[in-house]
Image (cartoon, rainbow, N blue to C red; front, side):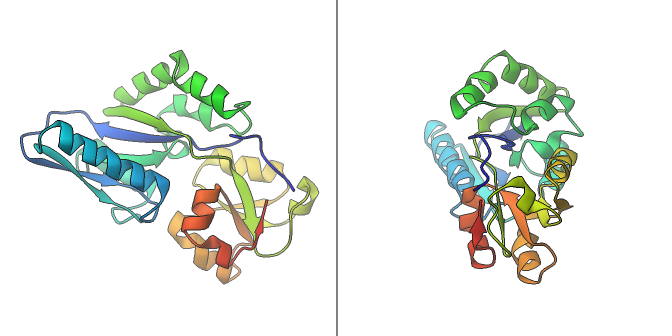
Length: 227
């Protein structure tokens, strides 16, 4: 089967908080496009529990999952304008706003998970964090989203040649569109929440994503071939 290296093309996930001082008894609104139960949603819920505990209840976090507050690019702007306070977002949607985020978004850029963490927890990560501040955001953490993979409803993918002419959903990013094109397939950017129905109705053959997304969004019901 075709496999990426452990973090090949992985979208490093970032949480961003609008700079500013919150008042006592403040409820922070946090957005995530993934469904309830997804690892990142559960992580932010736990973050909220720690915030409430360590501030003696003066602060709490309400998590809006399943893109209730909008898709990733929309919620980035909502955080910048102060409409929402926290945002768990993939790295790629920041590429147009923060050029420094383009580098870790590149496919095959990391040799391993350990390599990725060393890079992002070091000077490179510090430079990216500083770039967030230039656009009014505070970078709180990097997430490892796991290995990127392809899944589809048509056939097994055992080599790059098997992908020729197939249509895959990708995150709304030029980097991911170009990556899929380089592999000989056709990329279709679309919101995460539309993928299930798009595969089911044949609008696309499959999608490029990680296993947690494949599982929690029930994409396995309509795309049984996972590579």
